[in-house]
Amino acid sequence: MPNWGERLLAAGGAPVTVPRDPAREAARDELLDAEYHKHDPSVLKRITDWIYDHIAGALDSISGGGTDGTTGLILFVVVAVLIGAALWWRLGAPRRAARTVQDVYGAEGPRSADQYRADAAGHAAAGRWTEAVREQMRALVRALEERTLLDTRPGRTADEAATEAGRALPEHAAALAAAARTFDDIAYGERTADQDAYRLLHDLDRTLERTRPVLAPDTAGAPVPAPAPGGAA
Image 1 (cartoon, rainbow, N blue to C red):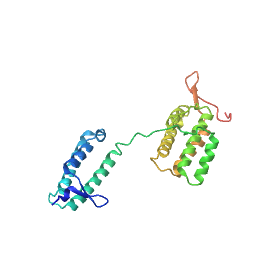
Image 2 (cartoon, rainbow, N blue to C red):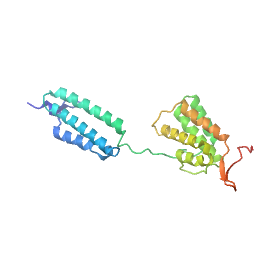
Image 3 (cartoon, one colour):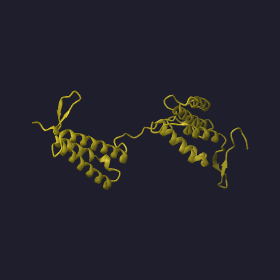
Image 4 (cartoon, rainbow, N blue to C red):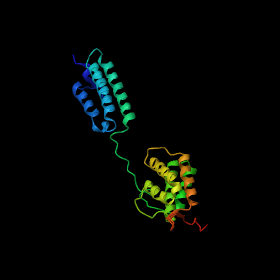
């Protein structure tokens, strides 16, 4: 009689033979992948050993070591799910490629700050927060370029714009960095946009409009504030 611990049912009902030892070795090889061990080798080795022991036990059960095939298969699936959840929680996605951060304006290139602001307001009114955040960050950066606080440079990312603008507007450097992180997290799909994220960028944009930049030191070495927008003293 066939060993039910070494046979599974395919989607169509046909039996598929799954040798125990190759499955165990494949699991061990995967768990020994260097990607899982670049965080904390000592802790992860203990996790790997624990997981391997449980996989081995589950496979032994499937092969008839005191448990019938159906029960062993259920046990194996449960253990596999728990292992996957534990690894994801501990390590994240170890095989995920690094996020590709692109030009803040995207492929279409820059437009005017006022155009971006109008588009952002329209998206916000319709509750399209991801689009509203994207357009509002572009308005903020473009406004800094129009004021010549940033040079107009193709390929600049939001992080780069925030870092460079923070030199001319040092009291807002932290807020600019936070705005860039918010934009990146939302634009590249790692965070859900909401009204608060949009308001953060909108309010910062309005604040920067009223802020006089620090451009260069005077002869005594003290920073000299540039004239406010519109020529106000």
